[in-house]
Length: 112
Image: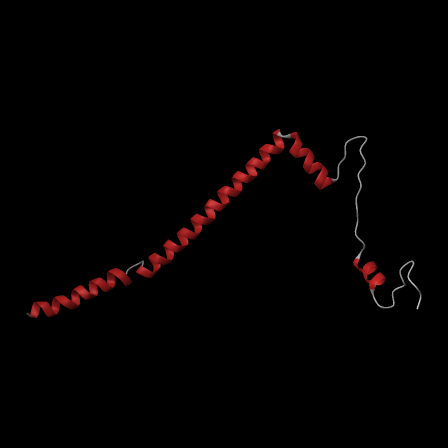
């Protein structure tokens, strides 16, 4: 009977130490598992990004149509004999000056 009262706290202490003591507690293990899962998701995303970049690099090396598209769209390059037309919007200050109060009347509108 005395042995039971001595053994019970020893077992309880061992269980407490098993879960919450030592170098890694139960909470540390769970935190590390979540961190590992997060890092694995980041790794998968990084691998997908690398694959996309490799595919793009491959298409730029081997596909002249893709290379020409980038040259035209990004750098405004044209083939010999072609003309490049660019349309620019009015600057903000010019828009305000033509639409604000005190702006000159539009052509063809009656004067006050």
